[in-house]
Image (cartoon, rainbow, N blue to C red; front, side):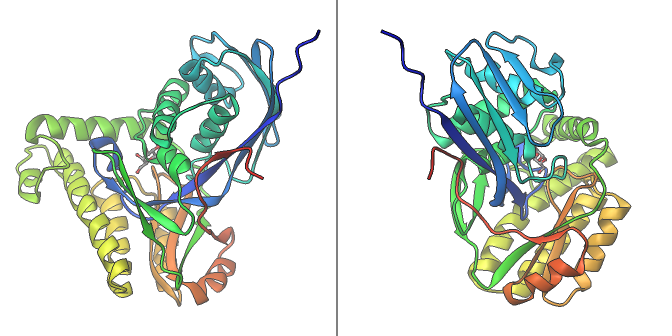
Length: 345
Ligand code: GLA
């Protein structure tokens, strides 16, 4: 009697925009991302002793051995993320299938996190959303060498329809914050593909760790602690983190009390801090943020994610969102979307 083949598996994982709270996650800080409708689907037939995936946006397939030991050395480059997941998950059997995505790659909408989460689910990951995010964060570290925080993977794994997620990256608590229906998020691509992001990211993280070596956890630090740092660069980095954590809470308060002008003001301040104190913006991104801030119906605009190009986001009055999106090339209204899933109909 033959063994019947395992049934096909289809997994979806959303990308994300981060509404506020950037470069805070890797020091146990606060962030407020939203899982978005755009995302990545991995459909596979389980079986065999390799993972073989073809992608609709890549020319070469990913072919990964189940005992892969160095994900960062795998080619083509996109296969490193698949290899990172295989190395972290060690599935008992391989799989053959396809990757399709509606996310622009390298735009700052977490296409790599969505790929990792969808691959892990398609290869049989079994556990809760936090465990899934942690596994995929390890996969990202192994694949790219970039010491990212947990925001992207946790948002993809734990998204909630119609809500922003208040992430406490120290306790790892995820608290949904309903997005008011009279507001909308519009993302506009700056047209600048993110350059230097990986190198600068690791450097910024190291600077935050150096600051923590002097004044203790940035999550607990005050502005006075940050000002006490002797090195002016570390002082600015720490000041960004301390003020950005406070802005996340101020933004949530402003949303909940429907003080939308205040919410917009907090977004504008966040961008200024990322530009001036954390130095992860670019002139093109700054220019787009400034133009969006002038547009009718926009509460506030800022860079989102790691920085150095990619997408800019704005929070708008819902009735103005479509017009804001069409006024800018590459502008889209981004609806929220729930968590990643396997075999949803
Ligand atoms: C990237 C990382 C995240 C986070 C952001 C900045 O997206 O993957 O962990 O650090 O940058 O907020």
